[in-house]
Length: 253
Image (tube, rainbow, N blue to C red; front, side):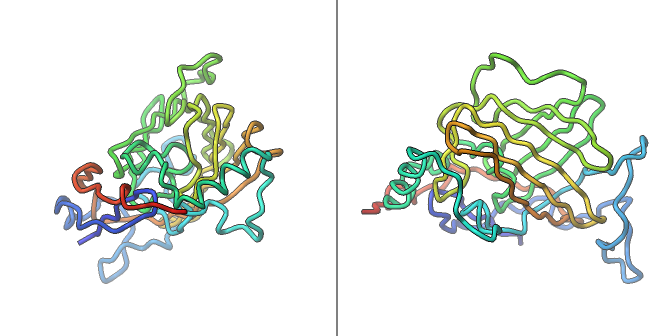
């Protein structure tokens, strides 16, 4: 059974997910002679010829804890106040992390949380259904622009377009309370996130993510989140508040 890790501030384990949709056979995917999915097969194409990014995906990295863990250097171009806030959050074991109270982690943090999410194509949008905290995103592809004066939200507003085989999402309009990872790297209402979804073959995809937040960082910086396809299963039920008992035990210094 696929296990569910409760993503509170310090990522402590919490039981197992409900048993739903664990033994199904995903139709219309390439398979090997033994019937197993051929995850090395070429990436599928949409009717318009572009690479299809739809499917059930799972992160293969721990960047939900430290978004910079895959970089050669963890030094970020912090603004001074942001560096001080990050140190304070580390000293207190991320006790004030909003996700410890089951609040959505925002973008790009939701892309790295170790739960599956389903990408669905529609005529005018790409939809992402996150198993964790039952979050969703609508990435509109109907030509609209990001709102000029948005009502700030945890997940922001997203628009997308295709650049060759890459699907590129632009997200902004966040509130001033988000964290980029569990360690507490800050984000502000000036955050603009660019996600470039690049499917390498049938079973593997990278999201190249550029963080541009001039209030918190002196220049943009980029990380990559690798994903793997999860065939022959589907999203499970996840209720964050059902057994959320960790946050009150985190004391720090």
